[in-house]
Length: 231
Image (cartoon, rainbow, N blue to C red):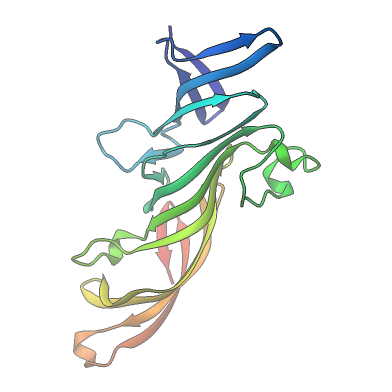
């Protein structure tokens, strides 16, 4: 029979009852454990981009020699934060951290990420080393929504967090605003605990009735009543 382990209020780890999970013993005691399961995310928290999937799932397959030190590469399908549908996240490289003695290489754990700021090694979650972030579809061109590749996002029991800072993302005409050709020359966004804390967007906009010369624009980005707001 399958077993479900609750990791936190937004995440379960489901183990199938198919014999794929087992522990090996030798004359010295515990030798290794084979763990095979599926992480299931609360759909009121994070949702898959795939409309045919009812919830976001990520498979875990790992053989470990220390149950207190589980760090494993994991594939996480493309997703969006349930209340931030304007931004998509396509994970290219990720590690799940279920270790008491180590954190993933490259992850900067700070005191506000753990219950005990004196022991940063107890952080639990998914470290997303490389992510392709899809920007709001309102900016889409014939080639689709603009995307930017970023590093160092993470998902823990508080939600999705990370910062986007990039330049020269989309050339003029590679994005649009109400049909007007748009460039995205710079973008800075901060996501914290499943919320967009704010950001900036800048570039050029070509308005047909104002002539051929594009106009420079700078916009602040925030959330209002669940929608992305530009000002």
